[in-house]
Image (cartoon, rainbow, N blue to C red; front, top):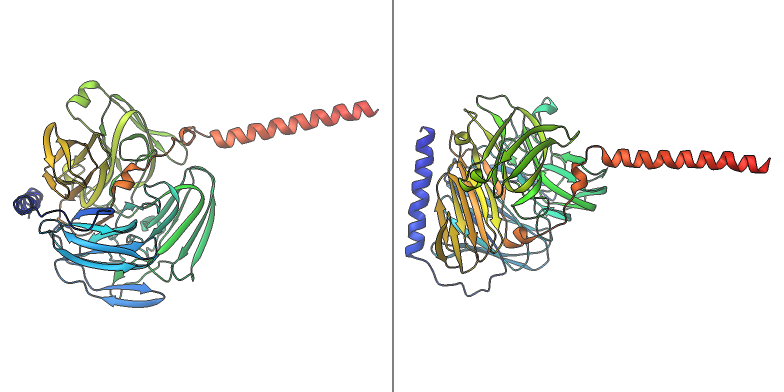
Length: 485
């Protein structure tokens, strides 16, 4: 199929399901809502038989055709988890988990679903025939939510997303599924669920720490990942953000201050494979006029700058920045509010050829979010509310959703809104995945960290203070000797 036909087929299928949802909208569930995660499973190629390490023992399983994997990791003992189809209201599955236990559900392609949990959980949705292939073009990029909520923190429990080319004959081709960014000086400690693997590292502000962790591989695949289980715990003494930087990134980037609208972002985008039309790109949408500067994380040199005007905001324009091939660890700073998408293209370096992949973002009550999608998006309503979608007022009931087409969209509601962006790319869905979010991840708020954007300030400051101390000590020593004489 041509790319335009792939996009049209996905959009038509989604709209049919959305109409069915509106016609058969179920009554509210009897169980009170606590922590709710929404998602849509795009039609894609089938997952193959997979190998996974469970407490040091290799376990093989074959997902049924036409299904994706929904992995749920519990943060607390006694966590009740229920999976619903939001179109029919049917309960699809349920389980009870203790801390660091994982359950895997099979979810049919084309399903709009919600996962309801009695406490916060980590939820990873993946699919496609090459997502878990340990070879060249596999892997899924995502940010890992913290245990407390949001994407900054000191405690993370997660199943790693699949990495890219685990056994690469050169490290240039390996894309890690653990990538830790230090917002302040910190010690990092990592351990697998069974305690047989552990690692530690000390980081300065703006440093990173990476590894390839056990996830899954295609049956019989060669894995170079560390760990004896597919669940890990990461703890730090200072605040960090944690991501997977696998090939084919499609991530709406959480702001350093929380939520998905902000003025400062850490946006890693790794693309080292030279393929036709492959490029790491940024898509930045303004909510206010202002100047945006993109820096390299390591030396804070400027990669590019762009000025948004009032007319840019009024006409919903965006900035498409193509970075090319390489490992781009960027820090982004803006004088006005923006949203940031990191992505990669294939076949052609163009916004229309972003993908394949899915990603999530959200808005707080009474907060406008603007975002770009190359194909389609689904807006879920976790609460009854009035919403404004591209300026049009709509009354939404809890669990209702709206399907949007390609382009830049404006979304705002009196309650939370969860948005899923779907991008089949040039070839349709071959590998895709992302961690799901809930309102607590959108609501999390943090103080800004402007010192991260000061080139060389921490080192020069400490060196300058140290130099002054040495000079002062030398002068005092000389004066003291003179007084004694």
